[in-house]
Amino acid sequence: MLFVALVSGQAVAGDYRIAVVDPNRVVEQSPQYEAARDALQSEVEERERTLREQQEQIASLQNKLERDGALMSESEVQRLQNDIRSRTRRLKYARDEFQEDFALRQNELRTKLGRQVQEVVVELAKEQKIDLILSDGIVYSNARIDISDLVIERLKAEFEKKK
Image 1 (cartoon, rainbow, N blue to C red):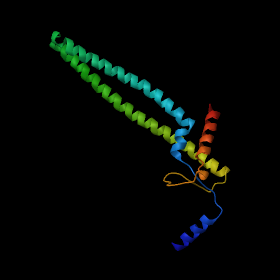
Image 2: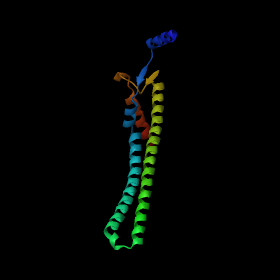
Image 3: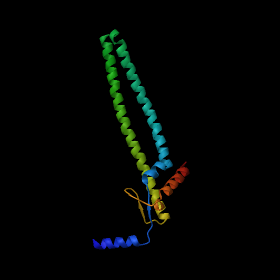
Image 4: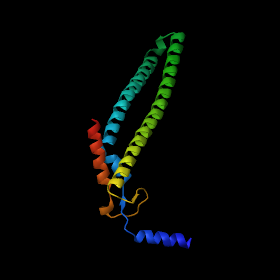
């Protein structure tokens, strides 16, 4: 153990370049994140609209049952109650599926963007001859070693190139 400590002590004293990346800031400020968020939002809006329409149809049927139920035959009331129950069940399943799909899509987009960020960080490390890049779990870092802005700029350039 002592040998490892001495070797690492010597390594720190050497001429090494160290940098820091704030992955959350990089992701949130990248145009890729904004584009993915906007695309996901438009997907969500369409499905939410459909779910709202289904809920409104159920509410309309319930109002009809309350308003006209006394005037309907027992079989009509039963049919309408079954229809409401069936639609409510389908709506619940559709909402559950929507939530699962949304979570899955968010994870897919975050994973894809995470890989892109990783690639850019490695490129920058090689270009700028950085020996060590630290990320999560940093308590303090001096702004002069933070390359997050460089990563964001590179992501912006790649985003523009792909447009």
